[in-house]
Amino acid sequence: MRAAFAQDEGRFSEFSLQFEDLLLDWSKCAVDAKTMTMLAELADAAGVEKRRAAMFAGDKINVTENRAVLHTALRAPRGVEIDVDGENVVPEIHAVLDAMGTFADAVRSGAATGATGRKITDIVNIGIGGSDLGPVMATLALTPYHDGPRAHFVSNIDGAHMHDVLKDLSAETTLFIVASKTFTTI
Image 1 (tube, one colour):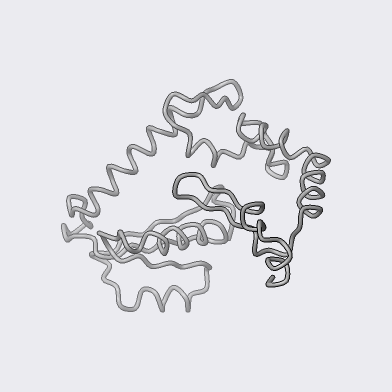
Image 2 (cartoon, rainbow, N blue to C red):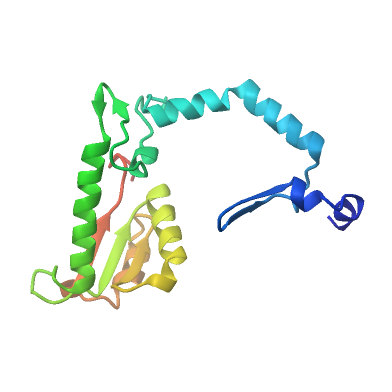
């Protein structure tokens, strides 16, 4: 890397871009202009732009499950239209997001309680693969802004793992979340 920067004083400018507070910097990666050109050509040959457009349009690009990939719709602003099988899914998604936000606020404030009326102090997320990794990553990233119950994660059906997580928790004050896209993963 030192040699690459020594040979090209404009390397950082050429291999980075900034939008507001977001900086994308690939100047310290083992790439040069030829590599970037080849990557762009490969993306063109693979039809990346067409596939990206299909994903954002709600097309069924998940070929193994024959369904749309709708995580993009979760981030779509209100008023955007994403049709799946002829139906705009965005209003329903925002209704669920609103309900989730209301429930999360109630849990954090203590308005939503356990069955015995005690405030929820701990949340256990049970998920495998992306249903674990995503929530763990988001929780770690947002730790500085944490204002609610402690979060715990169980990433498999191993009884020992569950035991380790639950041993110091109270059933009266623990909320369980079973996270799954299809409820077919074991």
